[in-house]
Length: 342
Picture 1 (cartoon, rainbow, N blue to C red):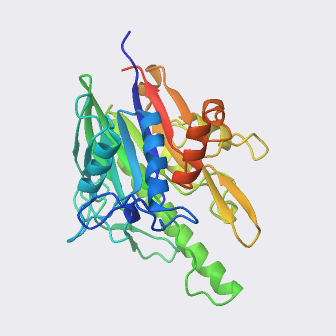
Picture 2 (picture 1 turned 180 degrees about the horizontal axis):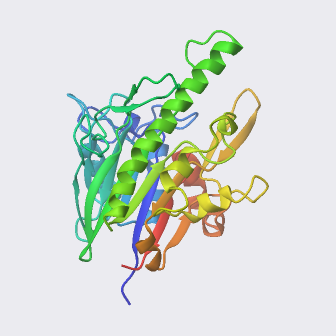
Picture 3 (picture 1 turned 135 degrees about the vertical axis):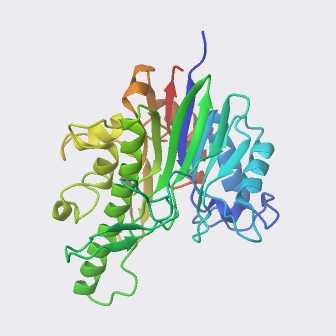
């Protein structure tokens, strides 16, 4: 029997800090960017997690930086070589200025993949702009179009696996913190403004997704949307989350992720989670669902099996001490995967 294809997304907290300028892993006792974790310990933990995942393709969120002096693709491929991963080929889309790239790590013997951005920088007739361009939308209902840009442009991948063409989009949407605010009113104003921009990015992304779905293409959208039902105090003000926008509304072709669907079923429903953060001021951990693998309707016929690799909520992860500890050491997010019978 042919094994399923496994597609995953994994937000690795400050992956970039684990490599030198030549893209070589820094497996030493220096501190990583993770609290109380050395670079050697984080690298070892990531090796355990990626090996356990054994995915054919992993959309890496917060991947190593790419600029004039650093090459994130080389860093990822050096990491894959060090850990002897099947997914040993890397690609990147439009580099950004945040030191947190979006990259794909994949098995070149199973998958053919290339960066394939769609659209023009300013958009075209009835077409959303390319993701490194500018999107025009009225954010504050003043009848004037505002210009929205992605700080981390989504990675668009044309992928072929076992003779099947799939459009894959890796995304990291983020609403900026209200930096510079000095009082409660300023915090609220900036928070609402930043929230509007994040929802505009979700609308922009949804326009691209809808175009692919309407063309009858297979689509996977995955990554960290930094948003979900009940997560944001301004959700009621805007009526819906980025997750709902990207998945699609009733009446048109929609994407599907069972974890998102469960979270959207009601505020009192049991909530899956994919990230765990320590809140210093409150001396406790906060868990949230931030990471998703959304698939098009045609892929739902491929017997999809989703999994959040959560050290406390997934029984295999919980009962495998080495993997359990590695997941907690490697990042503040946990991988999310889907197996597809392609």
